Image (cartoon, rainbow, N blue to C red):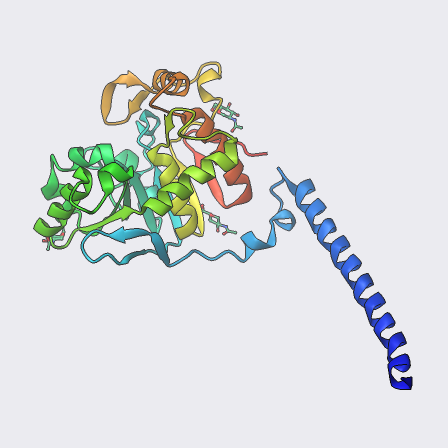
Length: 305
Ligand SMILES: *[C@@H]1O[C@H](CO)[C@@H](O)[C@H](O)[C@H]1NC(C)=O
Ligand SMILES: *[C@@H]1O[C@H](CO)[C@@H](O)[C@H](O)[C@H]1NC(C)=O
Ligand SMILES: *[C@@H]1O[C@H](CO)[C@@H](O)[C@H](O)[C@H]1NC(C)=O
């Protein structure tokens, strides 16, 4: 009995201590939470959240598997250059600058041959839409033999990418990997596709499927590059207000295809009730990511204040 009585104060004291400890912890959390909020939109070093300072690029990427070996993508870049397919690249003469980066990312079938002065000649990763795979297969010797240092990452919906013999794009890729033994071809897993949709919903509040749109290859490219790179320099991508800016440069939609104009395509897609890419909405999200991570946009320049 006496023994129990003596213990009561100890229990009480430690409960009180724990209680205060928890309160202090809560306050500290709130403080760092508020600090984060106040930092939002500022780009000073002190305001970078810890998680970003300590961020290291991932080496293995489970969301992308080799069509031949079924192994996950192994990719660990230093500083990356992402080269847009936009007509903005015409006449920029940044090819040599781009070729200095440790990883150079391109999209779909964007050529280098004939355009190297503006866009560079090296390609480390090519992110390709399922709809662009047939375009690569028009010139398989170039893409899968000559350019065998390039890693191909293909994204697409389950119906085209399923590996049970019924996915037409998957089947094309598998045959290609068998014919061109040195080709490095990866597909985006269904789970990863869902993750990319989820990020769209998280950032825009809109459901990608319900809003009747498709994510762009740029979206998939940036998501993988943010995992694989220390820093990203995006060349030739326009921001969300570019097409409403006085005196904007009227350029082709693709630097390698005359005819269609960039801003016409952007408005067409943004307002299409079904089947469009929400390019302008995506650019607003990219600007937000760029503030939180080490991403810069030039040619034309984005000011991220
Ligand atoms: C890989 O690419 C290099 C350079 O283009 C080429 O010389 C070589 O033959 C290719 N290797 C194979 C196995 O296709
Ligand atoms: C951010 O990326 C740029 C290149 O885009 C690089 O020069 C710089 O060192 C990087 N900074 C940090 C803090 O990683
Ligand atoms: C967007 O681009 C336009 C045209 O280049 C430029 O005037 C404007 O400052 C840019 N806005 C941001 C937020 O980068």
